[in-house]
Length: 175
Image (cartoon, rainbow, N blue to C red; front, side, top):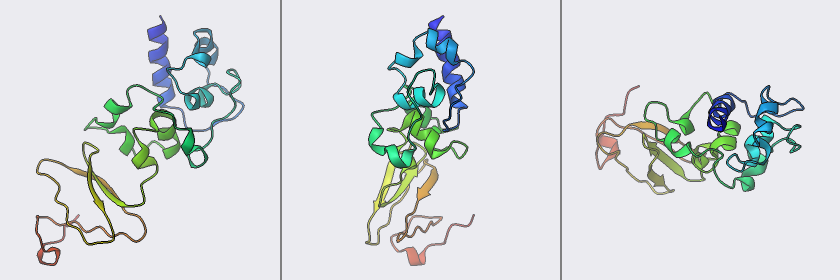
């Protein structure tokens, strides 16, 4: 019965926006009776976002003020979700950074707060390239798909259809 409650809780939490107020989720009383407020399988941020008043935990901080609070992922499935080639959780455009922080703050750290350098990630979320101020050429291995590139101010990303050692001679990738 506890497994069914936890499965239902996981499914319900996936739809929770990273918002907090005085309202608890509709099923909080059921979850609390099953030990949700003290269950360390769910991190504090998940418990705060789901049942802030019933668990007497208050509201979670937003990712911009709680980065130091990431003590680990809030769900044991984060690694599997993030490597799902069909729908990688950390690259989701329907989940806010705040939601990613609550559920998978460690696994999704690069997507929640892109690092100061320029990074390119392939479909396995592998750090393919970390570019500095120096010009660098990075080839994505054959068979990999470029999902997303994070480009900070001061960085420039140019994509080409074929690998070449001299970017000026390559054909720019048309989208």
